Image (cartoon, rainbow, N blue to C red; front, side):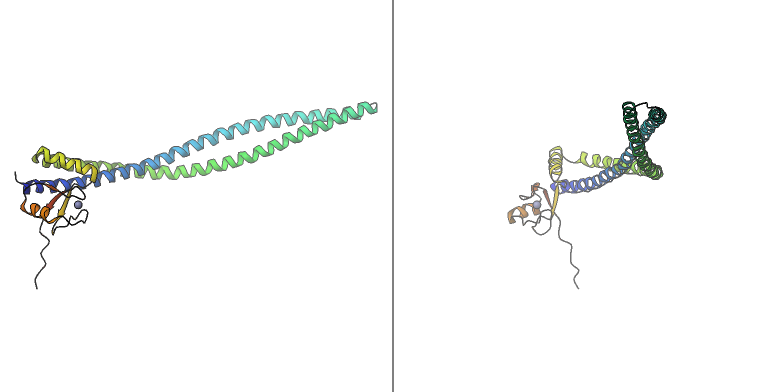
Length: 242
Ligand SMILES: [Zn+2]
């Protein structure tokens, strides 16, 4: 097999590799987009569950505090009666201190209940917002999951077809040339570089004239001394003479 043929196969291979890479990138992008939606969904579910739990917990605590406040109302009532029945100053002072203390406790409970009610309302609002977002996302997901799913399957099919073609092309190329090509491709992305007039068109460096002459003669596979890609020659496009 001549160098010219090697180059022709490498060109085919390089074109296929570029297409495969593009398809892979598309797949990654589409999968990422779907994963982002799903992560957002999981985040909302978590928030809604946490809000639901904390609303229930605050509701319970508020109920307990309300019960305590009611019991205190009864105690305040008894304390007032005690004050009314006080027979001397000492009893009167004791009863009024007790009454004051009970009222203070009662006020504390009421304040706590008020605070909890506010927190509950805020949590409820947050939960409702998250639920509205979730409803939107459910719609978005159900449409994009099926369309993305179809698209992914289609792109995968294309990629597999290209990979098959690549295998067939690769099978025609001598193993040492192929492994050199693959090693360069791994490092550089694109492994071959065109030259038309003595400049490497991958890195835009001028090639040493002797090297360019060797490439023109198709004696061996030559690497660009600057970017290390496999060089190949094609004449520049002909300008139309008028
Ligand atoms: Zn180069």
